[in-house]
Image (cartoon, rainbow, N blue to C red; front, side):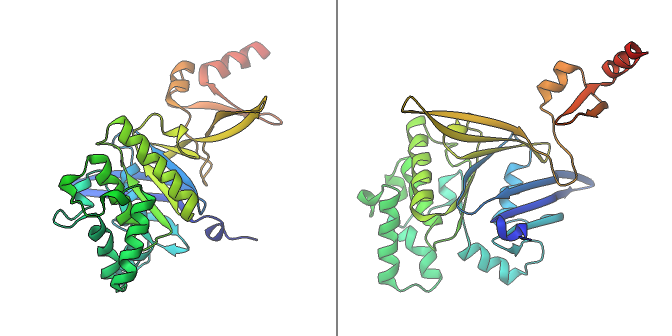
Amino acid sequence: MVDERDEYYINCEDLFKIYKIADLEVVALRGLDLKVRAGELMAIVGASGSGKSTLLNILAGLDQPSAGRAYVGGRDLLTMGDSEMVEYRRRHVGFVWQQTGRNLIPYLDAVQNVEVPMVLEGTAPRDARERAIELLRAVRMDHRLHNHPNQLSGGEQQRVSIAVALANNPPLLLADEPTGELDSFGADLVYEIFSDLNREFGVTIVIVTHDPEIAARVDRVVAIRDGRTSTEIYRRVEFEAGAPRVYHDEFVLVDAAGRLQIPREMLEHLGISGRARVTSGESSVEVLPEKERQRRDSERR
Protein backbone atom coordinates (compact mmCIF):
# COMPACT_ATOMS: atom_id res chain seq x y z
CA MET A 1 0.00 0.00 0.00
CA VAL A 2 1.41 3.41 -1.02
CA ASP A 3 1.81 5.94 1.80
CA GLU A 4 0.02 9.19 0.86
CA ARG A 5 3.03 11.09 2.20
CA ASP A 6 5.00 9.59 -0.71
CA GLU A 7 2.20 10.07 -3.25
CA TYR A 8 1.73 13.80 -2.53
CA TYR A 9 4.48 16.39 -2.21
CA ILE A 10 2.26 18.47 0.11
CA ASN A 11 -0.10 16.60 2.40
CA CYS A 12 -2.03 18.50 5.10
CA GLU A 13 -4.69 16.76 7.17
CA ASP A 14 -7.02 18.20 9.81
CA LEU A 15 -4.81 21.26 10.14
CA PHE A 16 -5.57 23.84 12.84
CA LYS A 17 -3.96 27.18 13.56
CA ILE A 18 -5.04 29.19 16.59
CA TYR A 19 -3.64 32.64 17.38
CA LYS A 20 -3.93 34.07 20.87
CA ILE A 21 -4.40 37.85 20.95
CA ALA A 22 -4.62 39.22 24.50
CA ASP A 23 -7.41 37.13 26.04
CA LEU A 24 -8.93 36.16 22.70
CA GLU A 25 -8.30 33.08 20.58
CA VAL A 26 -8.60 33.46 16.81
CA VAL A 27 -8.97 30.23 14.80
CA ALA A 28 -7.41 30.77 11.35
CA LEU A 29 -7.51 27.14 10.17
CA ARG A 30 -10.26 24.73 11.24
CA GLY A 31 -9.35 21.19 10.25
CA LEU A 32 -8.06 22.01 6.77
CA ASP A 33 -7.04 19.27 4.30
CA LEU A 34 -4.83 19.89 1.26
CA LYS A 35 -3.00 17.55 -1.09
CA VAL A 36 -0.64 18.71 -3.86
CA ARG A 37 1.30 16.44 -6.20
CA ALA A 38 4.92 17.12 -7.12
CA GLY A 39 5.19 19.33 -10.19
CA GLU A 40 1.70 20.84 -9.89
CA LEU A 41 0.92 24.45 -10.73
CA MET A 42 -2.05 25.33 -8.52
CA ALA A 43 -3.70 28.23 -6.76
CA ILE A 44 -5.46 28.82 -3.46
CA VAL A 45 -8.26 31.39 -3.36
CA GLY A 46 -10.55 32.70 -0.65
CA ALA A 47 -11.91 35.83 0.96
CA SER A 48 -9.76 37.89 3.33
CA GLY A 49 -9.53 36.08 6.65
CA SER A 50 -10.31 32.67 5.15
CA GLY A 51 -6.93 31.29 6.22
CA LYS A 52 -5.13 31.05 2.88
CA SER A 53 -2.12 33.21 3.84
CA THR A 54 -1.85 31.37 7.18
CA LEU A 55 -1.65 28.10 5.26
CA LEU A 56 1.03 29.49 2.95
CA ASN A 57 3.12 30.68 5.92
CA ILE A 58 2.93 27.20 7.45
CA LEU A 59 4.04 25.57 4.17
CA ALA A 60 6.90 28.08 3.97
CA GLY A 61 8.13 27.23 7.47
CA LEU A 62 7.40 30.78 8.65
CA ASP A 63 4.72 29.63 11.10
CA GLN A 64 3.78 26.36 12.78
CA PRO A 65 0.31 24.78 12.99
CA SER A 66 -1.38 24.29 16.34
CA ALA A 67 -2.57 20.76 15.52
CA GLY A 68 -3.00 18.32 12.67
CA ARG A 69 -0.49 16.95 10.17
CA ALA A 70 1.53 18.85 7.58
CA TYR A 71 4.09 17.08 5.40
CA VAL A 72 6.10 18.73 2.62
CA GLY A 73 8.42 16.48 0.65
CA GLY A 74 8.12 13.87 3.39
CA ARG A 75 9.14 16.35 6.10
CA ASP A 76 6.87 16.71 9.12
CA LEU A 77 6.51 20.46 9.66
CA LEU A 78 5.09 19.94 13.17
CA THR A 79 8.13 18.11 14.55
CA MET A 80 11.02 19.90 12.82
CA GLY A 81 13.49 21.63 15.15
CA ASP A 82 14.80 25.17 14.69
CA SER A 83 17.93 24.17 12.75
CA GLU A 84 15.92 21.83 10.51
CA MET A 85 13.42 24.59 9.81
CA VAL A 86 16.19 27.03 8.83
CA GLU A 87 17.64 24.44 6.46
CA TYR A 88 14.16 23.78 5.03
CA ARG A 89 13.56 27.48 4.35
CA ARG A 90 16.97 27.92 2.72
CA ARG A 91 17.02 24.89 0.44
CA HIS A 92 13.60 23.37 0.02
CA VAL A 93 11.16 26.25 -0.42
CA GLY A 94 11.20 29.59 -2.22
CA PHE A 95 8.83 32.40 -1.26
CA VAL A 96 7.60 35.42 -3.21
CA TRP A 97 5.93 38.21 -1.23
CA GLN A 98 3.30 40.55 -2.64
CA GLN A 99 5.38 43.58 -1.62
CA THR A 100 8.43 43.55 -3.89
CA GLY A 101 10.40 45.51 -1.28
CA ARG A 102 10.40 42.42 0.94
CA ASN A 103 12.00 40.30 -1.79
CA LEU A 104 14.86 42.51 -3.00
CA ILE A 105 17.82 44.34 -1.46
CA PRO A 106 17.61 47.93 -2.77
CA TYR A 107 21.35 48.66 -3.03
CA LEU A 108 22.12 45.52 -5.09
CA ASP A 109 21.42 45.11 -8.80
CA ALA A 110 19.26 42.28 -10.20
CA VAL A 111 22.00 39.71 -10.69
CA GLN A 112 23.50 40.43 -7.26
CA ASN A 113 20.09 40.00 -5.61
CA VAL A 114 19.74 36.55 -7.16
CA GLU A 115 23.29 35.64 -6.09
CA VAL A 116 22.71 36.43 -2.39
CA PRO A 117 20.92 33.17 -1.38
CA MET A 118 23.59 31.13 -3.16
CA VAL A 119 26.45 33.03 -1.54
CA LEU A 120 24.90 32.38 1.88
CA GLU A 121 24.86 28.67 1.03
CA GLY A 122 28.56 28.71 0.09
CA THR A 123 28.17 28.46 -3.70
CA ALA A 124 31.32 29.43 -5.60
CA PRO A 125 31.08 33.00 -6.99
CA ARG A 126 31.43 31.90 -10.62
CA ASP A 127 28.72 29.24 -10.25
CA ALA A 128 26.45 31.69 -8.45
CA ARG A 129 26.83 34.25 -11.26
CA GLU A 130 26.06 31.64 -13.95
CA ARG A 131 22.99 30.39 -12.09
CA ALA A 132 21.76 33.96 -11.46
CA ILE A 133 22.03 34.87 -15.16
CA GLU A 134 20.26 31.61 -16.12
CA LEU A 135 17.36 32.37 -13.78
CA LEU A 136 17.05 35.99 -14.90
CA ARG A 137 16.93 34.75 -18.47
CA ALA A 138 14.16 32.30 -17.46
CA VAL A 139 12.07 35.19 -16.02
CA ARG A 140 12.85 37.35 -19.09
CA MET A 141 15.01 39.82 -17.20
CA ASP A 142 18.45 39.08 -18.69
CA HIS A 143 18.36 42.53 -20.37
CA ARG A 144 18.25 44.16 -16.88
CA LEU A 145 21.05 42.30 -15.10
CA HIS A 146 22.71 45.39 -13.67
CA ASN A 147 19.67 47.53 -12.87
CA HIS A 148 18.78 48.23 -9.24
CA PRO A 149 15.21 47.73 -7.96
CA ASN A 150 14.40 51.46 -8.14
CA GLN A 151 15.23 51.34 -11.87
CA LEU A 152 12.69 48.56 -12.51
CA SER A 153 8.91 48.59 -12.86
CA GLY A 154 6.76 46.72 -10.33
CA GLY A 155 6.33 43.78 -12.69
CA GLU A 156 10.06 43.65 -13.40
CA GLN A 157 10.84 43.71 -9.68
CA GLN A 158 8.47 40.81 -9.12
CA ARG A 159 10.10 38.79 -11.90
CA VAL A 160 13.51 39.32 -10.30
CA SER A 161 11.93 38.29 -6.98
CA ILE A 162 10.84 34.99 -8.53
CA ALA A 163 14.42 34.40 -9.68
CA VAL A 164 15.67 35.12 -6.15
CA ALA A 165 13.19 32.61 -4.71
CA LEU A 166 14.50 29.92 -7.09
CA ALA A 167 18.20 30.68 -6.54
CA ASN A 168 18.95 27.55 -4.50
CA ASN A 169 16.80 25.38 -6.79
CA PRO A 170 14.03 24.60 -4.26
CA PRO A 171 11.47 21.97 -5.31
CA LEU A 172 8.62 24.15 -3.97
CA LEU A 173 7.78 27.75 -4.86
CA LEU A 174 5.13 29.65 -2.87
CA ALA A 175 3.75 33.02 -3.94
CA ASP A 176 1.51 35.21 -1.76
CA GLU A 177 -0.58 37.56 -3.95
CA PRO A 178 2.33 37.94 -6.43
CA THR A 179 0.30 40.15 -8.80
CA GLY A 180 -1.59 42.15 -6.17
CA GLU A 181 0.33 45.36 -6.89
CA LEU A 182 0.67 44.91 -10.69
CA ASP A 183 -1.36 46.10 -13.66
CA SER A 184 -3.04 43.56 -15.93
CA PHE A 185 -0.10 43.39 -18.37
CA GLY A 186 2.43 42.82 -15.59
CA ALA A 187 0.17 40.22 -13.96
CA ASP A 188 -0.29 38.30 -17.22
CA LEU A 189 3.47 38.17 -17.73
CA VAL A 190 4.11 36.93 -14.18
CA TYR A 191 1.58 34.11 -14.63
CA GLU A 192 3.15 33.19 -17.97
CA ILE A 193 6.53 32.95 -16.26
CA PHE A 194 5.15 30.74 -13.48
CA SER A 195 3.84 28.39 -16.17
CA ASP A 196 7.18 28.42 -18.02
CA LEU A 197 9.15 27.70 -14.83
CA ASN A 198 6.79 24.90 -13.88
CA ARG A 199 7.39 23.21 -17.26
CA GLU A 200 11.11 23.94 -17.52
CA PHE A 201 12.25 23.13 -13.97
CA GLY A 202 9.44 20.88 -12.74
CA VAL A 203 9.06 23.03 -9.63
CA THR A 204 5.83 22.67 -7.63
CA ILE A 205 4.12 26.09 -7.51
CA VAL A 206 1.39 27.17 -5.09
CA ILE A 207 -0.08 30.66 -5.57
CA VAL A 208 -2.38 32.47 -3.14
CA THR A 209 -4.44 35.08 -4.96
CA HIS A 210 -7.67 37.07 -5.18
CA ASP A 211 -7.48 37.08 -9.00
CA PRO A 212 -10.88 35.86 -10.30
CA GLU A 213 -9.27 34.77 -13.60
CA ILE A 214 -6.75 32.45 -11.95
CA ALA A 215 -8.61 29.27 -13.01
CA ALA A 216 -7.61 29.93 -16.62
CA ARG A 217 -3.93 30.20 -15.69
CA VAL A 218 -3.25 27.14 -13.51
CA ASP A 219 -4.08 23.43 -13.51
CA ARG A 220 -6.15 23.46 -10.31
CA VAL A 221 -7.75 25.97 -7.95
CA VAL A 222 -8.65 25.17 -4.33
CA ALA A 223 -10.99 27.53 -2.50
CA ILE A 224 -10.75 28.02 1.27
CA ARG A 225 -13.74 29.16 3.30
CA ASP A 226 -13.81 29.62 7.07
CA GLY A 227 -10.45 27.90 7.54
CA ARG A 228 -11.28 24.76 5.51
CA THR A 229 -10.90 23.76 1.88
CA SER A 230 -14.37 23.94 0.32
CA THR A 231 -14.27 23.55 -3.48
CA GLU A 232 -11.80 22.59 -6.17
CA ILE A 233 -11.69 23.54 -9.85
CA TYR A 234 -9.75 21.54 -12.46
CA ARG A 235 -8.88 22.87 -15.88
CA ARG A 236 -9.02 20.39 -18.77
CA VAL A 237 -8.49 20.85 -22.49
CA GLU A 238 -10.42 18.85 -25.09
CA PHE A 239 -10.07 19.04 -28.85
CA GLU A 240 -13.28 19.59 -30.76
CA ALA A 241 -13.13 19.70 -34.56
CA GLY A 242 -9.35 19.95 -34.27
CA ALA A 243 -9.46 23.05 -32.04
CA PRO A 244 -8.66 23.08 -28.31
CA ARG A 245 -11.47 23.99 -25.92
CA VAL A 246 -10.92 24.65 -22.22
CA TYR A 247 -13.36 23.36 -19.60
CA HIS A 248 -13.43 23.93 -15.83
CA ASP A 249 -14.85 21.18 -13.63
CA GLU A 250 -15.83 22.19 -10.07
CA PHE A 251 -16.03 19.76 -7.16
CA VAL A 252 -17.00 20.03 -3.51
CA LEU A 253 -14.23 18.64 -1.29
CA VAL A 254 -14.83 15.95 1.33
CA ASP A 255 -12.21 15.87 4.10
CA ALA A 256 -10.85 12.87 6.01
CA ALA A 257 -13.62 13.20 8.61
CA GLY A 258 -16.34 13.13 5.94
CA ARG A 259 -17.08 16.85 6.21
CA LEU A 260 -17.91 18.94 3.15
CA GLN A 261 -18.79 22.57 2.62
CA ILE A 262 -21.84 23.10 0.45
CA PRO A 263 -21.54 26.43 -1.41
CA ARG A 264 -23.34 29.17 0.52
CA GLU A 265 -25.47 30.23 -2.46
CA MET A 266 -26.89 26.69 -2.70
CA LEU A 267 -27.75 26.64 0.99
CA GLU A 268 -29.49 30.00 0.73
CA HIS A 269 -31.40 28.94 -2.37
CA LEU A 270 -32.66 25.77 -0.63
CA GLY A 271 -33.28 27.49 2.69
CA ILE A 272 -30.92 25.14 4.54
CA SER A 273 -29.50 26.37 7.84
CA GLY A 274 -28.74 24.83 11.19
CA ARG A 275 -29.46 21.24 10.17
CA ALA A 276 -30.58 19.22 7.18
CA ARG A 277 -31.67 15.73 6.24
CA VAL A 278 -29.25 13.49 4.29
CA THR A 279 -30.43 10.45 2.35
CA SER A 280 -28.50 8.12 0.08
CA GLY A 281 -29.39 6.30 -3.10
CA GLU A 282 -27.45 3.77 -5.13
CA SER A 283 -25.12 6.37 -6.61
CA SER A 284 -26.06 9.67 -4.99
CA VAL A 285 -26.45 11.55 -1.72
CA GLU A 286 -29.35 13.98 -1.28
CA VAL A 287 -29.30 16.90 1.16
CA LEU A 288 -32.76 18.25 2.02
CA PRO A 289 -34.06 21.12 4.12
CA GLU A 290 -35.67 19.70 7.25
CA LYS A 291 -39.12 21.01 6.24
CA GLU A 292 -38.85 19.38 2.81
CA ARG A 293 -38.08 16.03 4.38
CA GLN A 294 -41.06 16.40 6.73
CA ARG A 295 -43.31 17.24 3.76
CA ARG A 296 -42.21 14.14 1.87
CA ASP A 297 -42.73 11.96 4.93
CA SER A 298 -46.30 13.28 5.35
CA GLU A 299 -47.08 12.64 1.68
CA ARG A 300 -46.01 8.99 2.03
CA ARG A 301 -48.40 8.56 4.92
